[in-house]
Length: 442
Ligand code: CMX
Image (cartoon, rainbow, N blue to C red; front, side):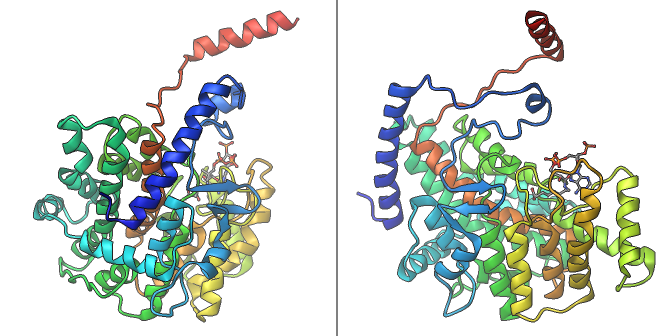
């Protein structure tokens, strides 16, 4: 019945997990997991344990672990392309979906699957071409993903009366098809926005990330390796971040993979989330412009940080809602730059900021994590290889993040997780509640 080895593994594992979860809910459904404080409600629900997410887990000190493996382990252990140095993002998807590191042959099978599924219908390109080329690439990306929804197997089968036992299957098919198409969609947006619509045909002998690099138009083989690493390390960050949570929330209504991912990408496009990678580079380049130098002194950088803070703005690329140490995704990008001998004034400033910004942020007395996050480094490496259009950077993040949020959507369907519908209250209710609690105590 099922010809697909990844789907077969997923089905077997998900069936067992689903039975176990049903039993857990039946036998222990009343156990309390957490309590919510007033400041958590006002401050964006930090730390409230209320989501199930199989594909990765974030530790405040150690950073992200994908099915138990950290970034540095995955850089070693995941299959590579043609003896290269960086992991294949396809193999991260395999790991996240079925909790097993794929063999080289399994990873290449997935590469081939995504090549076969990568064709984009003409109407999607036409929808994009109807937009001004100045439209932000993330807006185009979201529209492109929504336009692809015509291809949804889940939506079609649901309209035909699909049995709910088949939801996982249709979601898996949509996810595989959508992931296969994303590099072509993103490259199309890049070339129409910044290269006069001179598009580059896919190279079907390449892997998912390598072909993406090729279609962007950057031929340096090192850039392909950077893309493999980039698309791996941004792949997932557990379930509570805004893009993951949004994809999950939209998906909980039984919206298909396309509509769910478009929602998630709209969340990623915010400056406090994925857009920070564009903001970091714009912020540094603005500093260089203002100072009239690409090699600012420590004192000049400190003054610029001070002015940013005094202006009521955040230092982009620094801080995190969960992490309390330098982001390993920042560190691995630095490691790549050092190993490949990347040298530029921009990279020097990124590393200068790593030295200067944390103590300054710490001295504000309010920033909980003064360390760099993933976005502090990524742009400088991209500029080094010639990808200089900053407002495209969040699309790269989005292509990668789709791996994790869509693997998770498959799990949400397989585990029959419920429609999200937390309880809301008004500020009036909250004030009354607090007053009553205080009155009872006194
Ligand atoms: N620069 C200046 N102030 C910062 C700061 C930064 N980089 N990071 C946090 N703060 C401030 C917050 O704005 C907040 O100030 P107020 O009390 O005046 O509102 C205070 O410090 C406490 O915030 P926090 O608890 O440390 O951080 P949050 O969990 O509220 O926010 C984040 C986390 C990422 C939104 C925040 O650190 C930030 O705005 N960073 C810059 C933007 C950025 O790099 N975002 C990318 C994050 C990674 C990603 O999702 O891609």
